[in-house]
Image 1: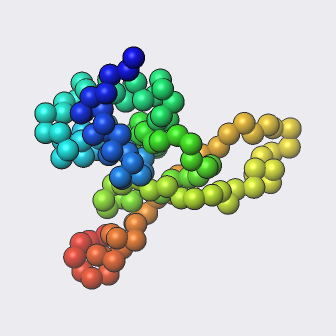
Image 2 (image 1 turned 90 degrees about the vertical axis):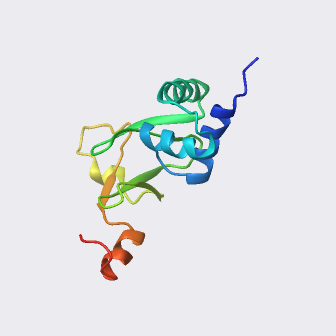
Length: 132
């Protein structure tokens, strides 16, 4: 029987509500808004459990390092905003693997990371509220 804890449910809620890839510190910060007593060890323990259950998947971002997101989503890529430092999911895939793969090579998987300024931050830049 699996234990259902307040901290574990708070962490699941964080992933459901934010619905984007998250790092450990982001999970901790958002989780503490729901359960102030949440600590780093509990976050690591539950992330490990979620990975083992197949509820989360881990990937490595070239700037932010290890991130986690919920499984069961269609193939997608990621956009990193250098101002707010969030990672957003980009639906679909524009890469044609057959054209991108050199002759004689076999592509087994791929990941594309775009970076720049997200819509929210770019509107603040245009309004003069922050600098690029």
